[in-house]
Image (spheres, helix red, strand yellow):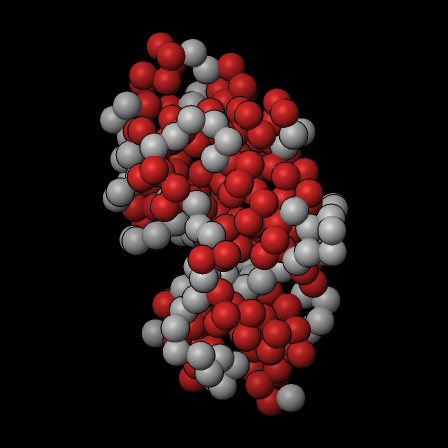
Length: 251
């Protein structure tokens, strides 16, 4: 109970609007339409590794290159319009990867009705969001792509912690009274989410005895999330704010 009290207090501190400005979630917060939020969020989450300031800056620049209409751009861009993106790069994610992502997203919205439907299809046979992520990845790479681009979409089936995808799913699914997470996807419940696991949250989780596994892999994600569900079965991933905040803001 002492641990739950501590973490609940930290959630109350960090799950607040001030969190948005310097976090990648600032990028989808530019928009109000569901499809724009989804696409902006997915692209921002994709490049969410490294320096947070650089992530937000590059995410906002990408939205400007897409005329601040990401869904319309994805659905209708021509080769000439795509050429303006040619200089975009974030670490190892380059123009070739970005173009592949845009065509994959176009395919998903045209053939499958959007991102929410694709993730949901992977869970319909009684699977968890792990299976939803795996199914999404299979659908995503239906379009032509280079092998190098596959590394930018994590695969839990190969043991990846899939931190960026779990973060994106938190943004879309978790219902947040303070206005940070969007809660747009009604086909899921927040109880289904897995905690995004990065070096900051993993370090704090181990210090608090919530995670014993040494590797930051999918098994660690499952272990941590199972323990967070003991603290709050309905909204376990709210504790991502506590773990991340303690690690980043409190060092």
